[in-house]
Length: 165
Image (cartoon, rainbow, N blue to C red; front, side):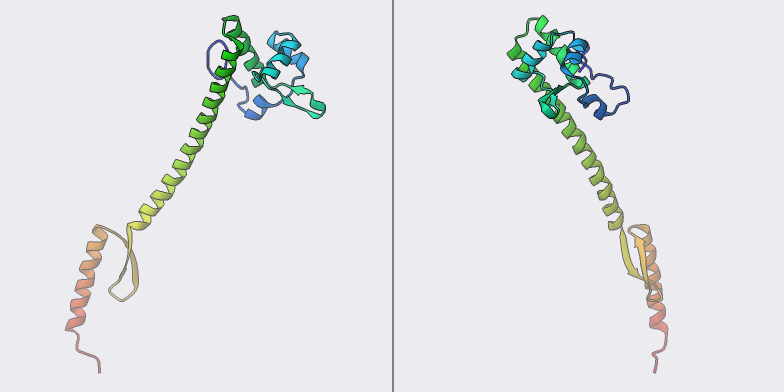
């Protein structure tokens, strides 16, 4: 989230991998967030902003972490307690997870809708015997009525034919 507007941060290329990539060491992250490195360590201990760890347990911050640090700083300067901030961040993370789940469910719905349309189309087809005995695939409705009329006509013609010896 963008700290000042409450909107999602413009991710540049739009690739989440870059947004979440742990690229900043603590000194650079502190400078970008305009905080002391010790403050970042404290926020990590409190679970407010938990960076990823690289080999040797070195903290690496992503751009998303930097934005979250700025958000914590803004809320703190407005008088929100660190516990309150922790709860807010937890709720924001929950909302993000739920939005992701909604997006996945919407994709599932579209896939199932496509399958249902295919089934509906297949259900409209019927198989019938043509006048000469061949199997004919037709759709329900007008085509069925026409096929039935032709079949009845062919049946009547067969009834008029003399029996074979």
